[in-house]
Amino acid sequence: MRPSSLKNIERLLTSVSLALLIVASVFGHALTPELKVGILNRDAAVYNAASGKVYLIDADHNAVNVITSANAATSVRVGSGPVSIGVNNQTGMVYVVNSSEHSVSVIDGKTDAVVATVPTPARSYAVAVDEVNNKVYVANIFTNLFTIIDGVTNTATNVPAGSADAIVVDNDRKRVYLLHYETDNIVEFDPATGAIAKFPAGAMHEWGILRSGKTLYVTHVQDSNIAAIDLDTHAIRTLPTGYMPCAIAINSKTGQLYVANYGDGSVTIFDKDAVTATVKVSPHPQALALDSDKGLLYVASPQENSVSVIDIKARRIRNTIKSAEHPYAIVVNPTTHVAYSANLADPAFTTLGTH
Image 1 (cartoon, helix red, strand yellow):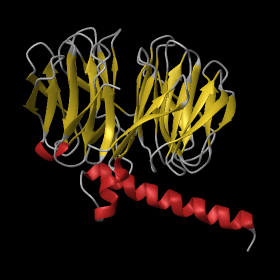
Image 2 (cartoon, helix red, strand yellow; image 1 turned 60 degrees about the vertical axis):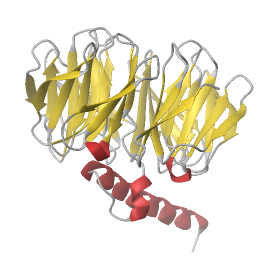
Image 3 (cartoon, rainbow, N blue to C red; image 1 turned 45 degrees about the horizontal axis):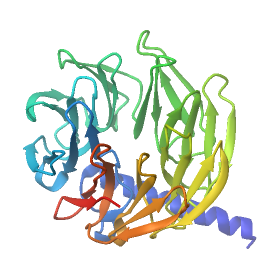
């Protein structure tokens, strides 16, 4: 058998296993004990700039943990099966997607009380907040309906824009982009007209998505590259990474791009879309969080119970934290510089500290 054929078989098996991992994350439980720590929705931890608090999903208890700048923690009960969370940093409102209950819990960041529960038409999964227009976009799995919540009235409308595993709001172009793992394109939604268009994403099995200026970055977990898509022309540049790139983050101050490579346990660092470093981290990294002021990148590896801390200036590991139980999402309080992880086991979150 030719090496190329073996490679294709390997990628096919990888794609099948990742599809099973997604099913496990959507349904909120494991298909096998090993899949419990598969690739899950990393949007489970956010910082609320309006309140100065951190919010982390606690899926096992149908709750959200709220942590103040003084590191005091409280728990807020939400709907069944919370999987992701978004925040409007202008209004301070927090939106928790409850997958099992088919709803979104709206939390007032001032009081941390649930002030509304908005129904969705199917199993909700991904969320993105348009702070400029005070809208919340929620994707629903196994349906073509896309939910739009009015941030003022907490009322919802559903449009047939398709299912999505990740959402990006682009206020510069007044568009919303939807990524779906099982496709090789990006859905472009126009909120003003309801028009829907599609453009190529470069390959199948997209997982991470991020916009910077006029460029949309999309990771391809079955390959060793990401797509840099020009949003004006839809031209694609392919950027090399490690094997199975999944999570992606950017430094808004420097433009430096970071990609976690699940398959080979590394992080690729880009400057102006050119690879400038590859840093080895704990195996199977899946989530990233950046403290740009301190120059630190936190990399979560849930299968290893590990968080690697990269000094992005020195481009080396500064510390490896082993105190978290299956950390799958990371957030940093930019004021206190304390990092936290959302975990797949008890305790539901870990204070990772400063480094």
